[in-house]
Image (tube, rainbow, N blue to C red):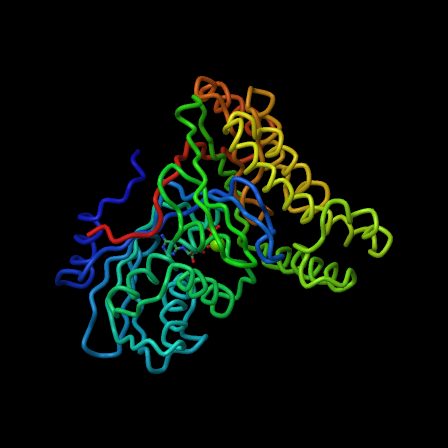
Length: 386
Ligand code: ADP
Ligand code: MG
C-alpha cells in the first residue's frame, strides 16, 4: 500500500468536511532517528532522516476567529474553537498539536485568524516515528506561508517544539521538528542541538544495496511521558553535579571522573548521553569515508547503551533488534524516545524477506502482537504539495 500523500485526495476530503476549496495543502514527514537518542535536550548531536510518510493539512482561512479541525483518523468529528478564547483546556486530544502551533504563533505576535483545517497522516501514531512533529511542522509551514510570517526553518522548529512542550506537555527537544523541517531527499540531517547548525549528510542506501527496515512493535509509548521526564531529570541532575551547562560538555575521556561524582544510576544515564554523542560523531565520520555499510556496529552499540544504561528499551524492541541481527542485519537499534515504538534495522536489500519473516516468527513465538514491518527511504522535509 502506498504511503505517499495524495494532495488531491486530501483537498477532496477537506471539501467534503467543510465545503469550498482549501487555500493549499502542506505536508511534513515523520522521521527515523538513525542515531543520537535523548541527546537533543542535552545540547548534543543527532542524525535523523525524514521518512516517506507524512502528515498533510489542507487549510482555508476564514474571515472570523473560529477554527474548525478534522482528521481522517478515528471518528469523523469536527472540533470547533474560538481562537480568541483559546486556552490549554480548549486544546485537547489531537487538536493540541495543530492548535498548539497556532497558539504559539499568536503568542509570537503573528496575526492569525480563523481557518478550516483537514488533517490526513500516513505516519503511524505513537510508533516513535514522530507523527506529532509531522502535524506541527505541516501546520507551522502552512501558516508561515498563509500569513507571510517570514519565519526561518529553525524558527519553525522552535514553534513546533514550544507547541509540544507548552501545549501538549511533552518535554521533548528539537530532534523531531528539525528532521521534519530541515530534511532533504536522500540525506540525513546532522544537527548540533546547541547551535541549531545542521548539515545534510548523504545517505545513499540504494547504491550500497542496503535498506532500512522499520519494525513498529505496536507497543505505544503514549504512557511513557513519566519515563521520558525522569530521564530528562537525570540528565539535568548529572550536568548540575558535574558542573557543566549540559551533558554535551562531558567527553568520553571525562567519564571515569564523572563515575566518582555521581550515584550509580545517574552515572549510567550520563554515560549513555556522552557515548551516544560520540557515536553520532563517529557515524558521521564513518559515513564519510566508508559509507552506510560500515555504520552497523555503531547502531547496535547505541541500542545496547539505551537498553542497559539509559533503560528506555522494552522486550519487544530488544527482540526486534536481536532477531534482525541474527538474520543478517548489519546493525539495529530502537529509534525515538523509547518505552515502545519502533526499531530500525540496517540490512542488505537481499535479506529483506529473511529479516521480515524472522522477526514476525520471533514475535509470534514470544506471544507479542504482530509488528508492522516496512522499509523507509530518506524523504524531503516539509513543503507545500498543492
Ligand atoms: P509519535 O510522535 O511518536 O507518533 P506522540 O504521542 O508524540 O507519538 O503523538 C501521537 C499523537 O499525535 C496521537 O495521540 C494523536 O493525538 C496525534 N496524531 C497522530 N496522528 C494523527 C492523525 N492522523 N490524526 C489526528 N491526530 C493524530
Ligand atoms: Mg511525538
